[in-house]
Image (cartoon, rainbow, N blue to C red; front, side, top):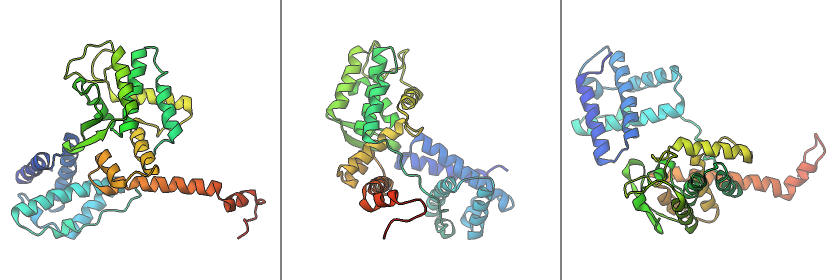
Amino acid sequence: MLIAAASRDALQGWLTHERALNGAADATIRAYSTDVSGFLAFLAIHQGGRAGLGPLREITVSDMRAWMASERAHGLSARSLARRLSAVKGFIGWLAERDGFDATAVLSTRSPKFTRKLPRPLAEDAARAMIDTVELQSPEKWVSARDSAVLTLLYGCGLRISEALGLTFKDAPLPEVLRIRGKGGKERIVPVLPAARQAVEAYLAICPHPMTPDAPLFRGVRGGPLNPRAVSGVMARARQQLGLPSTATPHAMRHSFATHLLAAGGDLRAIQDLLGHASLSTTQAYTAVDTARLMEVYDQAHPRARRGARSAPGKSAAT
């Protein structure tokens, strides 16, 4: 069933608001549009095809439960449903404020519970080995230098792969701090380690492609922008040689940056700023990783744990 024109126009108004005032990225806007459109289509059928904005002002708790049950019945995971519910709440909350109606039934709907996946960083020696190994993957010296420079930036500065590949030649030579425009157009200041600056300089010294100020800093073999899939591919080959798990991806280098910085005593708020996280709760996931690793070391090293490991089969360690 088609969405009523008034509802469709309201959705476009909200998306414009999110893009203009909140700086939502294009990918976020597309996800919002898909999520809310699906909700509006369900509501049109569920409420018997009623047109206009009236049905949106009269959504009940029962309507919300029916929509969530329908989504789960179609195989949607709790995590994905939570994301869709967040988009719906954002839209209805904006509409309620604009048109002056009570949206409590929507805004009070509880998100389904799900287990958040912890970041999967590499160990410090594995992260260094990954950077060293990607440098051996190509017979072209400039390609090897490029791949090493990209990974050094991801691990040394905590950049997303899109942020690293978004750098242009006017950013070179890299300064001591970079202004990075991340998700939602949010800008942050990121210190650049000497090792990262040196890796980029080594790559640029032998890159065969001409550079203009607006040209991408990292180039593909034919001279165009470097594709993220090429970075993922070279890491896949390197992790096979190193015996690392499939979670050793470009984004894992960013996770490793945050986890290792935290383990070295880094302040959580400072790490949040370096990563460009909008919410501290996102950054706090790294504390769980650090704690899990600490407990693993504790279990392996504590004398009581070692006594338990030496106990005869079927017998527990002394208490």
